[in-house]
Each structure stands twice: as structure tokens, then as C-alpha cells.
Length: 294
Image 1 (cartoon, rainbow, N blue to C red):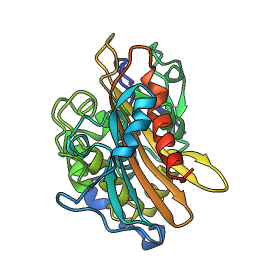
Image 2: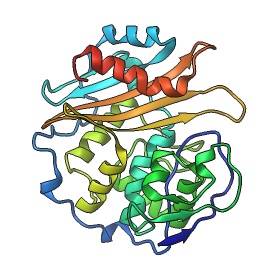
Image 3: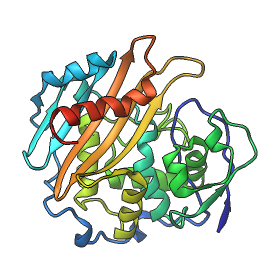
Image 4: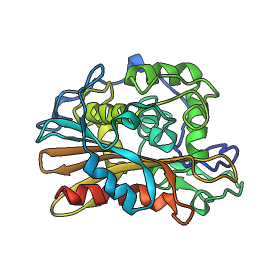
């Protein structure tokens, strides 16, 4: 089914989603089903959790010519760790990692009907070639189509968007700065530790979303499926127009049978000769491989 979306202005920040008319309020959202929870999902973190310093992981950042941090939670060990605890507790703009909750909002409100809902290109030329075409919802997520997700947010509207950000208890819940850009340049902030908390609640079936929505979002987050693991994740980045990258994200989890390893990688600096976009995922995988997880 074709949907027409006004994609709006091109962005130098990567983020996205798709939209369809008729939104409903969060009170109409279906209750989560216990069947979709991970079998051994650990309880979500609350308050200011105890965090183990993992300074040995910093060498993987140094090897890539970047600065930043990675937060990890391994359900087998039950330990929350971080290569730089101070950075892990600091809140940053989520950029395109907000496409994870934004996709939930789009599906729960009926703004997007399903993963194959088509978002029709508006004919504007954007800086990312992949955005200059009609896109299915699943593909809009994977190519991080900023204008798609901005169009979704406009159709959802300020009031319902705020209600859902509150219900999902995402970051500081601040959607100031414009309904179609609060996660890009507005007031929304989230720390790496809060990213881990949100992902754990998602995988542990502790969010007020339907089983169908959870399954769709898990599916569109899937990057790799191997005999050993499944990798589900989302990138994010922010930069002022014509300026170098301000920060980069790679957040998600590894599924190793019933075991889960959640991660939130943040890059906040890099050498001039380093392209930070591919490094977000690469440094995360270096850390996971160093720990024998990939």
C-alpha cells in the first residue's frame, strides 16, 4: 500500500521512519505478551546502577583513532560495565538511535501499518542517495532515512509523541525543539547507560507495546544472523551542516541463544584521517570479539 509522505528538509544527521494517517492514543496500545520476552531477560536497571569500570576496552577505541565509550550488559554475568563510566553517565542527543522507539510509536499509533508499508519519495534530492526513492518502512529504518521519520513524527503530532516518549520512559523525555527534530537538534537526551536500560526493557518485554510491534522492530533491527549469534542494532550520528561528526552511536544487542549482550557505543572524537561512520560498528565488534562473543 502506498503512503505519501512530505519528507521535508534534507539533514546531515542520520535518522528516520515512515508514516500513515490516523493515529491513536497510547491508551489504545495493545498490552505486551509474555511469550515475546527473552527467556532469561534480566530485570531493567533502575535509578543510578552500579557500574563496573572496564578500562581495558579503551584500547579498542585507541586502535581505531577515536575517543568515546562503550557500555555493556551481559545477561550471563549480570554485570553492567563501561570503558569510561563518566562518559557512560552523561546524556547526549540520541540522533538516529531514536528510530528504535520512533518505529514503535509509528506502529502503535497506526501511523505505519507494517514493515512493508511504502513511503513515497517526495521528489526532493537528498544528500543520501538511498533516500531519493520510495522506501518500505523496513528499508527506511535500515538506510536511516531522516526525512521519512520526520514525516512520521509530524503525522503523530506533538501531544501523542510526548505521551509515547513518556510511556516508553526514554531518556530525559524532552521533545522540545520541534516535533520532527527533537531527537536530532532538540531537547531529547539519553546516556549510554540509559540506552542499555531501554534496550533491556524492550528485549525483556517490559515496554507498553504489542507483541506484533516488538517483533517488527526486532526484525528491522537485525543486521547479522550467524550460526553463533544474531546481531540487532541501530546507528546514529549528529553533525552540524558542513561540519565534522559531533558524535556517533551504535546501540543494540547480541543474541547468543538465550544469552543477551547489550551494548551502547558512543564516539565523541576522532583523528582527522578517520571516517567515524563505519567505525561505530567496527569498534563495537572489536570489543565483542575481544571478549569472545563474536
